[in-house]
Image 1 (cartoon, rainbow, N blue to C red):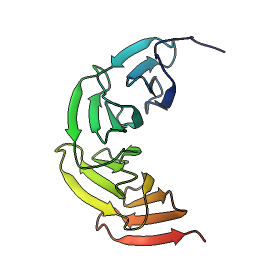
Image 2: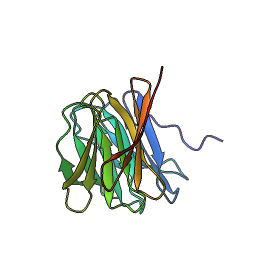
Image 3: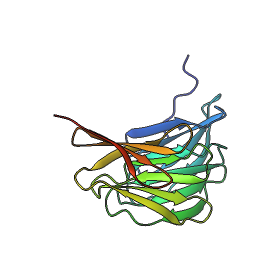
Image 4: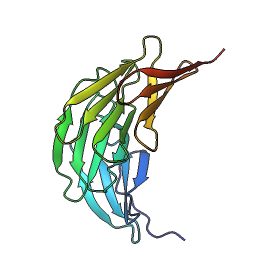
Length: 178
């Protein structure tokens, strides 16, 4: 059944994700906003404005208290999931950020920069870049942690997948299409 029909976004909605507890979810849009909604009532809870470009990816932290965003203009930011306040910004990518993902324990943030051919691993509490994973030949279009957080798998635009050791940074597997 339809809970609520909203016209809160003024342009196409491009991303959505439930909070870990399932009580809220967020949406992002080409209108450069992120909105947090009550999953039971459809009521808008928080409206985060002020992005200077579209949000290409977003993720809730495992505890649901923080939202990470990756934007077309290469910005990566962490936001308070209740107040909508900006917590920290990370810099380093030189092209659009296609993926942001929290590690299973919430202590690290994985970002993938597509055209800059990197995935980057950040320490959430300090904002420090812990490791940069570089693909010499491929644009890294998306990346994910393994369930134990010890490996990272990345997909590329060029029919390839890479698996890195999240601790050492070494390539464990490289699969390339024919």
